[in-house]
Image (cartoon, rainbow, N blue to C red; front, side):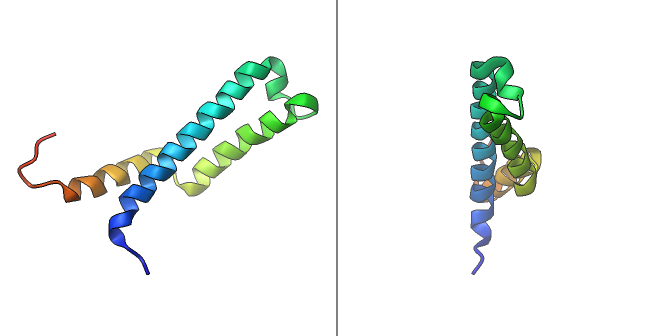
Length: 84
């Protein structure tokens, strides 16, 4: 069964997860330096993770769309007189 109220929460979770993974991948590249962007040797795992993170972010839906969906779904639950 599909719960329409879960859409915003799931979108926000996808957004936060892809942002966290991208930050981890970026930190790994910074730590490994030049080796972090090579496709072979010591940097292969970092390069693979970095590419996978970007692929997963696109596959799950673009971050901007996920963030907008989360905000729209959250606004539906706010009282009509609430001000942001």
